[in-house]
Amino acid sequence: MSDCLFCGIAEKRIPTKVLREDASTLAFPDIAPVAPLHALVIPKRHLAAWRDVDDPQLAAALFAACAAVARDAGYDEGGYRIVANTGADAGQSVRHLHLHVLGGRRFAWPPG
Image (cartoon, rainbow, N blue to C red; front, side, top):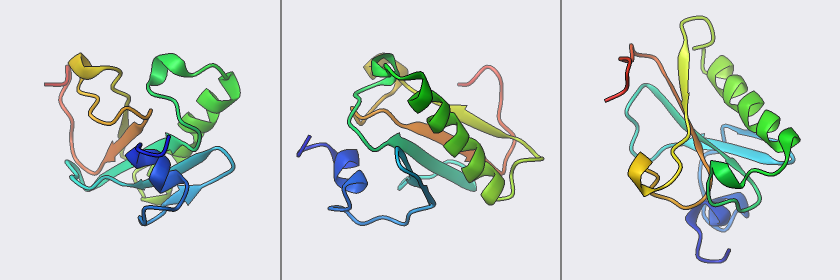
């Protein structure tokens, strides 16, 4: 999608710091971090939300990328959180599937 922000990042039309990349995923820092580690992991192909994931291998690749980002940042042992918002009521602001990887501070449960 030419007007999708995250497609532009995945296609390298919009520059960002790449934290991790493989054939199907890309990870980069969130522009408004809420934790010492706040990265976004996206599929390179456009999927609007988690409900649109139709490939179990892609789902696995997304979660593996999240784990690798947390490990590379040094938060594997202390813990980290993975969040995927689907739809406006859940707080999804960009209509391209993205998983937030958050680490480096204590998180409350249930989330606020």
